[in-house]
Length: 455
Image (cartoon, rainbow, N blue to C red):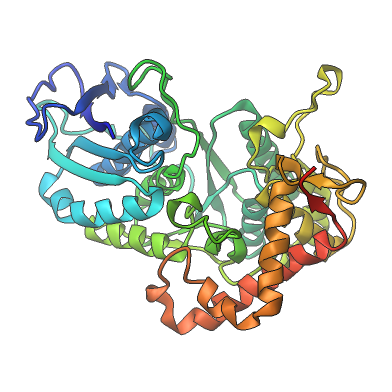
């Protein structure tokens, strides 16, 4: 295992020596501040807020800065090369903040939250910002020109599109917050925001898109990592900063179906951080706890925690609009399969066989029977799917998990605890069990009759 030490620097005057507990640590300094402001996409967000008369607190800016540093470490430190077990990395972060004493009180909670989220060993250290960097969020030059009534994560996927539709239909004027890492994702986000504004012309709908990204040589000589377990920490931090800028008590809506949110491992060996926990109830509760410790009046809420994706589609406040535009949302997690192999037909497609694609297909079948989403794997019944390849692996995993549930239905009440504790919601265990079983049964109806085996 290689112990990594990431030092965040804020400007040329940030030269304070950092005492390291281990001389063998691999140390990387990342300069986040230039004359034009914060780098790596953070400054762009602050400028967008300033133009509409909004200014977040320095604490919420520090949270976004910390989230960006976590993203740099998570995406640029290789698990294969730098982890003793090809998974768990050891990472120290040193971050200058506006109120280090407040952050010091939250350090232990932060380390616990990050360990649950990514499976790594984190140690986060805070120090005062350097002289002359008292404020990173400049005062706006205009009075607030918008008055959103809700903040909503907006990924460009089907769940977040439903969430936005339901908020607007309920009378809200939402601020949609998107993060993107590629042109495909940003295109879906822009399209979905545009059609929302067209369809609801009487409502004020605002959209902020953010790209926080780091070059391949940020840490070491071109190291990269594609597991990206920390991504929702960045999403939540950016949305919390925007919500904080709006003032007062704010809710950040996190639209995610209950089956994906729980994300019970399909394979008995796929435990811990090997199974993503981006919106798991325990993680969201810890992030809320962190916001409270930082005195930020922001709360995360998943209004669909007890809905399957199919139930979300059926209950949407504007089904006709949703059905018309659903094909323009992107749910696929398999970037390498989103494009047709024939260059002459190279248009974005869902792969059709990753876990999010299977859940999406099952939901649309459940709600509407017909699905016009373009999939790379269009017909799962046309041939035997090879379980030694991506095309059949997840289908077979679902089939095995459903078989176990059929043989022992009572195991569901135990399975829901496997991804992580549900101790913050002991009064809702029955609801979590119900959404897990119902979500699995939705997928079961989709893959009934599909043959998947090694070829």
